[in-house]
Every structure is written in C-alpha cells, then in structure tokens.
Length: 432
Image (cartoon, rainbow, N blue to C red; front, side, top):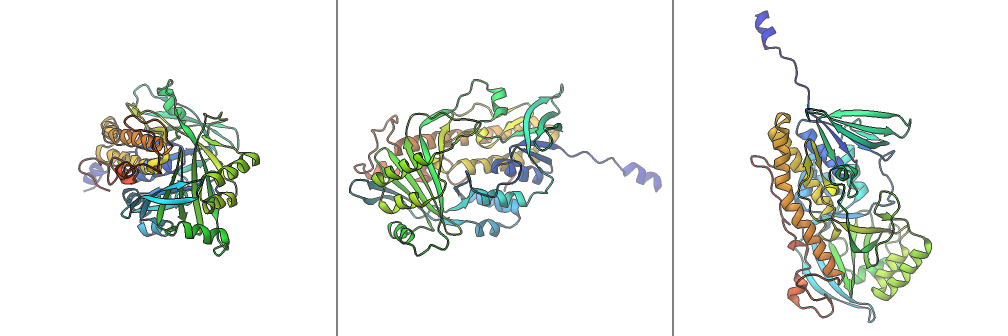
C-alpha cells in the first residue's frame, strides 16, 4: 500500500507564467483572462500607483460581448452594470453653426452599449486581481528570449529604488499601448499614421448643479442624455456627447489640423490656458450654445492626437504576443479600442487554455488567425468613418456635408455598420 502511494505521488507541474507589460485596461484584461486559463501572471506597470483622478481618463462605450466577458472575470455582471449608464440609442445630428439649429440624421434605438468612465472600469478590473499581480512603479527596459525560445526574460527598473530586476516567464504579452516599444523591436520601421485631426476631450461633473442653467439647457437640447450616444456633425468637424454615471457629461470635439509635435511617450497633449480659451471661442461659432457652454464649464480639458496604423500582418513572434493598442492602434470612431482590447484578452486566454503551454505556438497561431481579420477590418472601418465625419477625402465618397447629404449616406454613419459589431469569432470548442 505504501509503495502504491509512493508510485502515485508525482511532482506538481509548475504553472505556466506570463509577463504582461502595461497595466492599462488591456493589460489587466489579459491578467484576468490568463489567470482564468490557469496561468500565473505578473503585470509590469510604470505608473507608481493605481489611477484615482481623471487627468487623461474619460468616457468609453462597452458593447454586449465586452460586458459579458468583464462580468465573467468579475464574477458578477451586476457590478459592471451598476458602474455604467445605458447607451441604448446611437444618434447622429447635423448642426448648422451659423443658424444654431440641429436636425436628426439617423437614430438607432437598438444600440445596446453602456457608458463607462475609464478610471472606474480600470478600478473594477484591478480590484478583482490578487494584489501581488501588478508591479506598480516598474519601468519596462528590455526583454530577451532563451536559446530554446521556451522562456522570456524581462528587465525592469524599479522607480522607488532605481534597481534593475529581471522577471522570467514563458510568455511576454505586450499591452504597452499604441506607441509600443515591444512592437517596435519587431517592426522598427512601423510608423503610426496621423489622422489629420486632434480631439479636445473633457468630463464635466455637474453633481450639485443639476438645476443650473447650463445643465437644464443641455438636457433640453439633448433630451435623451443618460441613454443616448450623440454625434453632432458640422461641416468638416464633429463632436460626441453622452452622460456617465454620477452626474458627469463626457464630450469630445474633433478638429482638423496639421500634426502637432508631441513630447514624450504619449498621444495626449498638454494644453495652455490660451489654447483652452481659443477652443471656447471656436466652440461658440461651431456648436449649439448649450454644448459650447458645457465645453466652457469643463475643468481641465485635454487634447488627444488621433493616430492609427495600417493593419499588421502578424501580432506574435516566438513567445511574444501583442494585445490592445499595441496590436491595433485605431481611431476612436467605432468605439473599438477598449472593446477590441477586451476581445484580444478573452481570445488569447481561451487559446492558451485550449492548447496548453506545451503547444504555445499553436495557441498563438490560433489567437492571431482569429483576431487579425477582425481587428484589421475594424481599424479600417473606424478610419473611414472618422474621415467621412471630418469631411476628409474618402475613396468612393464626395466630401460629406451633413446639411445636404441623403439618407443612404447618413445611414453609413451608424455604429452598427462596423464589421463584427455583434460578435467576433472565438476558438472552436470554447465559449465565454
């Protein structure tokens, strides 16, 4: 009996381990997905602490499949539901800046998205991870593969001590954003494409001011705030407006301009008080006075410089894989960036669970074969949609004028036209 017990006792196989570079929504989503697949994970993030304020955070829209996946990771879908507001309607308006009138171009009442604030979504994902998973204040320096390609070593600098440490894993997940340094090591000649426009963004907190003239006015002009995603289209420009939980309004205004000079590793520009004042003056000329007033009363608006890149031909090399904006820098017009990142994480986790560490190459091949057709078409659709709305040249289109365009052209503006709007493919023999 003792001998039989000795024979059946086998050493426990070590868990596969992934090192994820980047602790934004894409990185945390991958952490959840890979933990669900039975992997150990560590997330390397340069920020010294979790985000709490909203210096560059703003609103985003989550589709049904992304919400379903996040609900599975959180263990209770109601938690995400309680942190968001409905975007049941997708509406495009034409605005005449001179006459200060607006008319509806299209209205889709079956949109079924929900509005979240980036910081709050990030917090939900972070708090459901074991505290030891994310290494805050660790700056990614470099990586190297072992001779047999079975391991990857990641070097990071610890900001608090200035020490350099090495982390070893079986897989490196690059979730380091649209300016990914890991992607650059494989594609050194890849350049991002400037869209031709930038976006002013802001979130107005109106708690305690619900009966102010500004808020009563905006709700008269946009009566479905709290359930509607509003797009206002002027000639050669457009804006976005929707409500977030806890009495906040999220707005975006896209403006055609030459490419600005960026400093540092960010597509967010610092703005001066003079730039903000000029934006306020221009808003009064272009938009309804109610929207211009909301922009004027928003504290600390900021500018995002809008980039994308042509779809990549591959998104993994050996045991290094790209996810999120590192895999598909995209313009925001299809509400895809966060939704694509969550889908990337979900599919990667399912592929790793299906194939196991011993078949890592097969897992990454399937991940790539499933995601490339989806992200490629969504990036290009979002690019075209942005150019149409900004009145920029588009093959097969005359310059779009929202005041004179016909119904068929206007229907092309709806969000549901994006490829794979309802669902993207998952690995065979798996489901979320």
